[in-house]
Amino acid sequence: MSEVIVITSGKGGVGKTTTTANVGMGLAMLNKKVVMIDTDIGLRNLDVVLGLENRIVYNLVDVVEGKCRLKQALIKHKKYPELCLLPSAQTRDKDAVTPEQMIELVNELREEFDYVLLDCPAGIEQGFKNAVAGADRALVVTTPEVSAIRDADRIVGLLEAGEMKRIDLIINRIRMDMVKRGDMLKVEDVCDILSINLIGVVPDDEQIVVATNQGEPLVGGSSLAGQAYYNICNRIVGEEVPFMDLDAKKGLFGKLKDIFKK
Amino acid sequence: MTKEVVIKSNKYGMELILSDQLPFQELLQIIGEKFRESGNFFKNAKMAVSFSGRVLSTEEEIKIVDVIMANSDIQIVSIMDQGGLQEERMKNRLEAAADAAGIPRRRTARRAQTTAATEEGEVPQGKGSDAPVKKPESVRSTKVSSEKTHLTHAEKASAVDLQGGFYKGNLRSGQVLECPASVTLIGDVNPGARIESAGNVVVLGALKGNACAGMNGDSSCFIFALDMQPIQLQIGDVIAKSPDKVKDSRHLFKKEKAVQGAYSPQIAVAREGTIYVEPMTKGCLDKL
Image 1 (tube, helix red, strand yellow):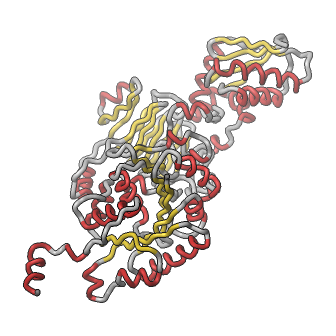
Image 2 (cartoon, helix red, strand yellow; image 1 turned 90 degrees about the vertical axis):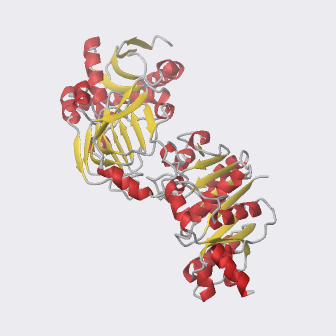
Image 3 (cartoon, chains in turn green, brown; image 1 turned 180 degrees about the vertical axis):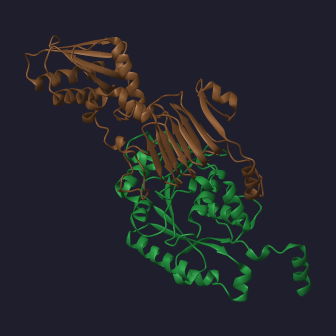
């Protein structure tokens, strides 16, 4: 039974594309057949984050307009042949595609892949409507900032009005040291405001920036963020994984100090 | 029914011998059927065409060309004057036309077959792209209807077009510069931007996006750039992508900068279905 998941947030810059890349790759690591669709027409960058920019020949709009076959536009990932990308067009805009066309496209992909991930553009206009149209399930990404949460709340409202079957929350770029000082909202606070199921918390991590620039998602790696994304993937496929202790990153000295405190 | 329309072909094109007994509409239908049947045989050849056996108005000729192109993948690049079916003349015109802008840009099967990157087409122009796309007027006005007058002066037109165009400024992501002849860009082509030309492409700046030379299938064209770091290159029907990024370069941007300081002008040419990028030396110049 295949699932179509849209990754959305409302606000820009909270990590939708990064999340899509990492979740897509993580699911591929779990031996699922995954296709990622970049629906951000005109501002594409999922291909860059995945390091597949130079392989693009055809794109989403070409497929929808019948200029090429769907198979021709799908780009296989370098490491995981079961992981495909359908890039968006750079020279067009969101109006080049309609929600009906997206539904048709998604249904075609559904037959061949276990998971279809839709990377949604920021905003709530045409691009958002296109991305959401064909989805069964949504991952709402937010950061622990009031502005991002405000937008996420609006998005959740829109998704619920559109009768999305399942909506999960990812809190991205949380900094435990700031939370402890009381300078940042706690995970619980965010969950209280949005009151949807939490599927993962990803700590702020320098490695994400490095990985993005290199075009190599860090899911499954040794970094905390990589592990967090891997856990999210496991939860998506339906496994029970306990939430990580995000304070764990302390090094030997920190751990010793903890012992002595006791 | 075969008597009404007879297609004769030679090396450079074909002659349609048309009956003058039938009404024009009926004739059109027969032509359409004929080409539908034999369209596959011609594939997407570029051809010159001439008519005889019937006096046709310009409009009628254009209608016939439309019907031919609608029913087959043939690209009609030139309509010859009546009775002027000399192979030599046809050849000259055809070659001139192929170089010049006058080729009707019906990209259907041909483009798909060449796995070419197709983002441009009739895309930009106001709606959609915010890009202030600079297109030479001759491209916009190139339609079948303008063709005949154009090709009657084929030699003159090609001489003008082959001089190519100069453009100043940077092409940013999402912008497409399309040119019917060779093009020189004074500025950079950023990642996500695209420069296209039926002839050669010269970038006096950094080429970091996509470039396509000889977009009508001429693989003898070249792409030149002062700083060659393209995402994809296309020459004629040959397409090449850049090598993947080297992993584990922790100081990604620092390294790139270091390399940038040492760049040298490079030229890309296509040989036997492969694109070669080599430093611009005097030897290269001689080969061109």
